[in-house]
Image (cartoon, rainbow, N blue to C red; front, side):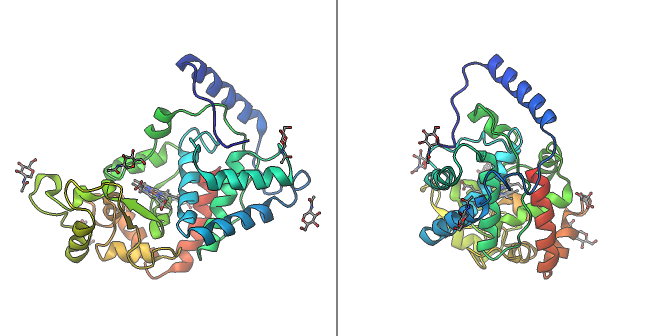
Length: 297
Ligand code: HEM
Ligand SMILES: *[C@@H]1O[C@H](CO)[C@@H](O)[C@H](O)[C@H]1NC(C)=O
Ligand SMILES: *[C@@H]1O[C@H](CO)[C@@H](O)[C@H](O)[C@H]1NC(C)=O
Ligand SMILES: *[C@@H]1O[C@H](CO)[C@@H](O)[C@H](O)[C@H]1NC(C)=O
Ligand SMILES: *[C@@H]1O[C@H](CO)[C@@H](O)[C@H](O)[C@H]1NC(C)=O
Ligand SMILES: *[C@@H]1O[C@H](CO)[C@@H](O)[C@H](O)[C@H]1NC(C)=O
Ligand SMILES: *[C@@H]1O[C@H](CO)[C@@H](O)[C@H](O)[C@H]1NC(C)=O
C-alpha cells in the first residue's frame, strides 16, 4: 500500500470525512511512545534502517523527510493526508514496515519516525516519538497548501499560522532551525536578489557577498528550480549554524532572516530567541526535541 490518498469526490464529502475524523480522533485518546510495542516491536529498527539507506543514497533525503512530516502536521494535523505520491523513499520505508508487520502502522506515524531518524542521522538531537496517529482518508492539494507558511509571509503571518496549530513563538524560531540542512529553489528567494520590494536593490538584510553568489546561481528569468543550500555553513549537517547565519545576515529565505532582522523581531522576541540559540547548541537541540513532539501531537 502506498502512502497516498484518493482524490476528493466533492467538497461536502470532504467536510463530512474531516468531521468524522475529528470525532474519531477525540475518541482515540492520547498518543503513546509504546503504541506498537506488541503489534510491531521492530518498527523503530526498520524505519531507522530504511532512513539510513536513503541517506546513503542521497544525503538531502533527511531534510526532505523532515519537511514532509512538517507539512503533514500543518495540514489537518499529522494524518498522512499530504500528497506523497512519487516519493519513492516513503514508499520504500512503507514497504519495509508492511513486510515487518502488515497493515498495522499508519503513514503519519511512519513519517514522524522517519523525521526523527533523519535528524538524528544528520547529527541532530533525538526524542521519543509519540505514536498512534490515524491516517486520513483524503488528500487535497488546495487544503494542503493553505495553512502552510510561505517564505514571503511577514513575521506576523508566520506566527499566526503556527498559532493556528497550537505552536508559539518559541516553536516558530526553534522549528525554523530545521533550515540548518536541505535546499531551497531559486523561486523561493530570488525576489531578495533583484529590485527587492521595488527598491531597485537587493534585500538590505542579505549579506552582499552571499547576494552576489546567489545572483550567479539564480539569474533573472533563469531556471527557478535550481537549488541553493539553506545553510551556507554546513549544508547537510543538523547543527545550530542556522542561527549563526541569521546574526550574520546569511539566512537564505526572507522568512528565515526576518526572525532576526524583521521590524517585529524585537517586539515578538524572535530576535532574542535566535541569539539564545546562536552559540548554544545544547539549548537549541533540547528545545527542538520538545517542539517536534509538540508539532507531532
Ligand atoms: C517558518 C515557516 C517556514 C517556511 C516559510 C518554510 C519554507 C520553506 C521553503 C520555501 C523551502 C524550500 C522549498 C523549495 O524550494 O521547494 C523549505 C525547505 C525546507 N524546510 Fe521549511 N519552511 C518553514 C518551516 C519549516 C519547518 C517547521 C520545518 C521542519 C521542522 C522545515 C523544514 C524544511 C526543510 C528540512 C527543508 C529542506 C527540504 C529539502 O531539502 O528537500 N521548514 N522550507
Ligand atoms: C525483531 O528483530 C529481531 C532481530 O532482527 C528478530 O529476531 C525478531 O524475530 C523480530 N521480532 C519480530 C516480532 O518480528
Ligand atoms: C499485506 O496485506 C495485503 C492485504 O491483506 C496484501 O495484499 C499484501 O501482499 C501484504 N503485504 C505483505 C508484505 O505481506
Ligand atoms: C511556548 O510553549 C512552551 C511549552 O510548550 C513554553 O515552554 C514556552 O515558554 C512558550 N514560549 C512562549 C514565547 O510563549
Ligand atoms: C523596481 O521595481 C519598481 C516597482 O515595481 C519599478 O518601478 C522599478 O522600475 C524597478 N527598478 C528596476 C531597476 O528594475
Ligand atoms: C520546475 O519543476 C516543476 C516541477 O517539477 C516543473 O513543472 C517545471 O516545469 C520546472 N521548471 C523549469 C523551469 O524547469
Ligand atoms: C532591536 O533592539 C536592539 C536593542 O534593544 C537594537 O539595537 C536593534 O537595532 C533592534 N533591531 C531591530 C530589527 O529593530
